[in-house]
Length: 313
Image (cartoon, rainbow, N blue to C red):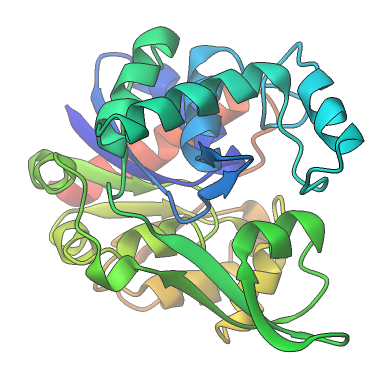
């Protein structure tokens, strides 16, 4: 069985760990969001790719859900002593090594997809992890800054430094229109028996992947099941509500499903708190969706996979 999953950061990575447990013999390709990527300290940082890689490879900081476990921050502290910023984005010493290797390989002419494959040779995540594109795409957010007026900032500054405290006027994946899917992305989707959307951010994670020309059409041709990132009108984790508000979508399981649309998503898993949700053109099923432990996460992934296989018949 061949499965393709589109994934962002923490929620996507944890769901994928459950999917790997639910379908250990499956051929799983993960198309990772790179819109969150940013250059810091002369290094190329790919937060979502790394979170998936570390989580599935057993190196993630479980409490945070991002970054390396058993981490130290000596380099960050020394940079601050030199007055070199930004201070709001904390890279640990072990994490720095990943970004150094990536940046060196990119500078040597390797594509991001080849670099990601090389990094995964160490971590052995048990899936094929592919960036959505080898081209540079960065999500930017337009905000009304009380001090500086309306301006565009990198998504990471809005998300990490400001904690989405300034309402977003708009959110855009800069460079997506001209980008091409990374090698193997469209072939993996075409060959897939089913496509799954983990409970990742529908705007800046899955939405950004779908913005790359060719990917949405390829996905729409397959049987797709998504897992709602919204439970009882609130994000399970993070600030997805701020992103949804920016694009005029209500923070609800129903509204997110309608945002994707029945032309794209065939089945939709919602939490029991949203069991009365119906979406025209979609098969909606309810079950507990909190990924509280590995077994609960495996069960969620199994339910999504079962529904997809049922609809694919």
